[in-house]
Length: 187
Image (tube, rainbow, N blue to C red; front, side, top):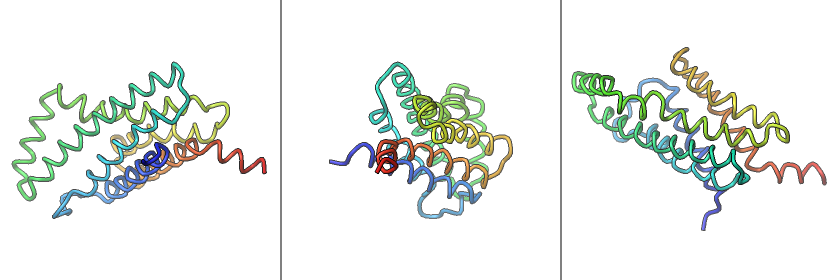
């Protein structure tokens, strides 16, 4: 059976790969399969394993709930994006669906604008457990997550979004193997 830490690393890898695709711009050029959203979907689902590898305490309980909400929202967002991608060259159909989603707050808010950020918030809350012991790694997660959203929604910069995701993921990977890192320094 695959260990939770391995699943976390796979999730981080898939998540970063999805952001490599997202940073390239137009996803409609992916003719046979929407790789960006498949990697994002699988990565997000695997990231739920972080709920099982960090210390159990009150903060972890809150972080775990936020992470689960974020994963559910990512599943919804990817589903919407798969449908959008399926329109191919039918821009009128895609625009009609986009307008319908924009006019439906019960879909727009939890699955497009706010919900997916809960994955970043939940994992950042997990990182708060390590702010004193692994300050740099924790800050990479806590600051990297918001910059993924800011770089997309405010700055419209795929490169900054990708770099922010890589900082976020690297911080999580370092926290994931924090004991092994300390053991290596003591030898």
